[in-house]
Image (cartoon, rainbow, N blue to C red; front, side, top):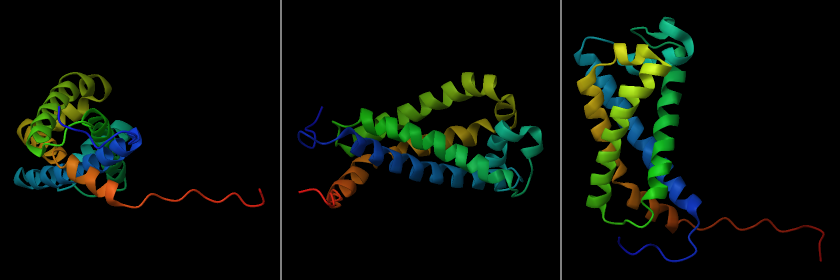
Length: 172
């Protein structure tokens, strides 16, 4: 492991930097999945609609933008943001971008196989049924590669001045 950022850095800073990294990487993954969906002659909004079927059933699987699309986007951001936050906590002692990127790609591939091989088959089989495997795999590799930007998000978060504690009014 490489040198950390010094003693006393709270764990929530790593989680916040990981959350930010995970959400930004999820947005890039969603953009890729939408573009790949266009190549399959489907709507750009098909991937979030498929994930929205978790809440709304097969009525959410539409070939256009709908009100249900927001819940699919939100679920993507929630899942992959949380995965990024956990990644940030796990990568607290790593600062080498190449090493963090490789670990991120491996984590994303492992998550792809776990989620599509086990979890979605049990929770919502429509996701596995309607999702194209290759673009989703490439999307996860892209997501993992962008997790490698975690040290940059952490440095940017550390550069920001801490918020001062509110003064206690009326106490001597």
